[in-house]
Length: 117
Image 1 (cartoon, rainbow, N blue to C red):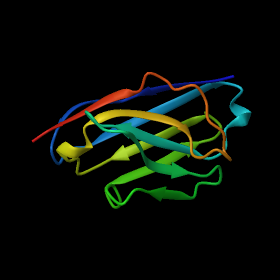
Image 2 (cartoon, rainbow, N blue to C red):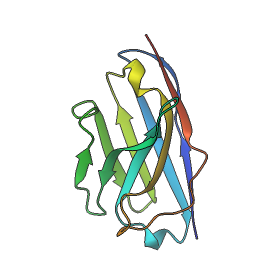
Image 3 (tube, rainbow, N blue to C red):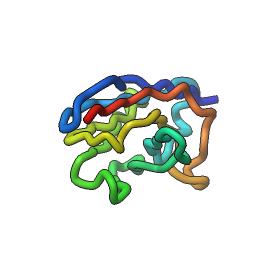
Image 4 (cartoon, rainbow, N blue to C red):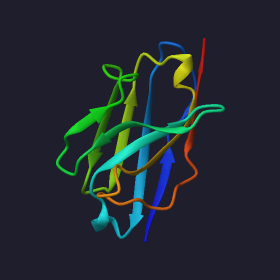
């Protein structure tokens, strides 16, 4: 069992920054590729950024150049640094495995990010 807990969200003005954290507990040795997802109001959940266990990252086109994903394997924590935030970045942000190959876990509560214009 792996438990995921997201934190760091909040209300920020457009152009601002936030840093999200995802702390994993339990059988953290199972963590491979990890990703951040978000679900905007009335939208489907989408993958925002992913990172391999070795640190190679990929990003959705909508966040390239603004968001940076990183991880601390020793602490079983994944981070998402979000800069130059836009109102369309508003949503609930979750972390989970990056693909069926990496494995998925039970979804956490997520952390709310609200960007005001």
